[in-house]
Length: 170
Image 1 (tube, rainbow, N blue to C red):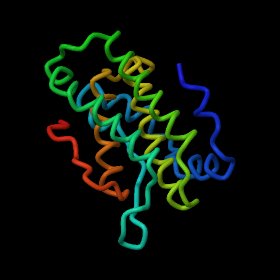
Image 2 (cartoon, one colour):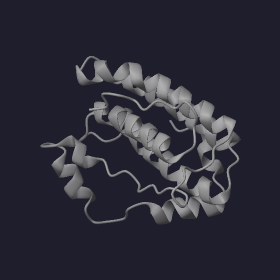
Image 3 (cartoon, rainbow, N blue to C red):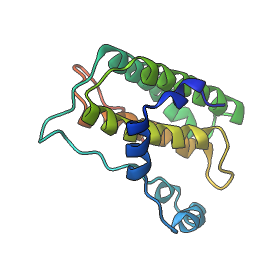
């Protein structure tokens, strides 16, 4: 279940997120492709830099993304080895959602950086839905991989000193 804090998006951010989300008739195609190549099912939002520079961050964002990274990285090997249970994926998804809720509630960024962050948050939300088993056509392991990819995209586009990308995502 999603944290109620996720519903606190400012109207402008919610509109920006909705407008940035891909809306196509290709969703059934992506679902059909999961049987042959699950990585094709993930369509992350396009992130851009701030005129060639990383977006500014604040402490609540850095702390929350650091905790999400710490939750996800140690579980990737077990996920790739098919050793996590559905309950473990659901618990991990809940923990990630809790961190995202805290980021949304406490992070104070400039509007442009905030809009870009909400693209990462949308990717995290889709990934935790997959981890929770809300998409029966996609394995929960792909959701975990997608969380790791979203964390790495965050690190590539946001100024987070000492951020280390998650290795061995795939």
